[in-house]
Amino acid sequence: MESSLLLLYASKKADIFKRLGELDKIKYEPNEKIFAELCFCLCTPQTKASAANKAIKELEQTGLLLSGNAGNISGILEKSGVRFHNNKANFIVAARNYFSRAGQMKIKGMLNTDDLWGLRNWLADNIKGLGYKEASHFLRNIGYGKDVAILDRHILTELCKHKVISEIPLVLPKNKYLHIERLMKEFARTLNISMAELDMVFWSEHGSLPLEEMK
Image (cartoon, rainbow, N blue to C red):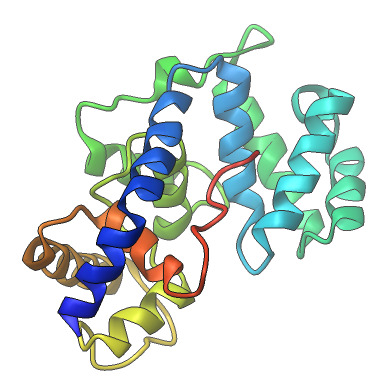
């Protein structure tokens, strides 16, 4: 089964590297773009990436992402098909307040990328609505997450299919998340690819690379 993954990886390698290269450039975007990526990840739990993408794009275009209140934001989230729109609107406002200084978005200066795992811990501990999966997702989307796992149900299903884990857990507390991440990292190492590449190989088994960042 590993050989089939490597064959698939070889066939998709150019597309995978192109996609990862696109993500790597995001870290050089303005503060507002980085914040928008964070908000996208706040919206994705139990919601299609396309719906979260649509909502954040409209919030950017209307200026509400940086200035709207929770009610304004919630309405656009609901219209776009984002589940739990009220909670997520509150998360967006709370994150905006957390990363703003004197009315200006300053998120880039508050992301210490020297310690990737420490940064992920900090995000999960301090930003409401970000668990380990969402924090990993955000870091991947801004070019810092090649070595962290985004353990959504699809990836867990693939890990189970390839016998990296014995079953799909019903819940993922921190210790369980980190344990499965270590197993995934070991599996990626046996294939001589990064976890980000393995993630995209798993997705490409179903025909396409994932919509992991906003378009």
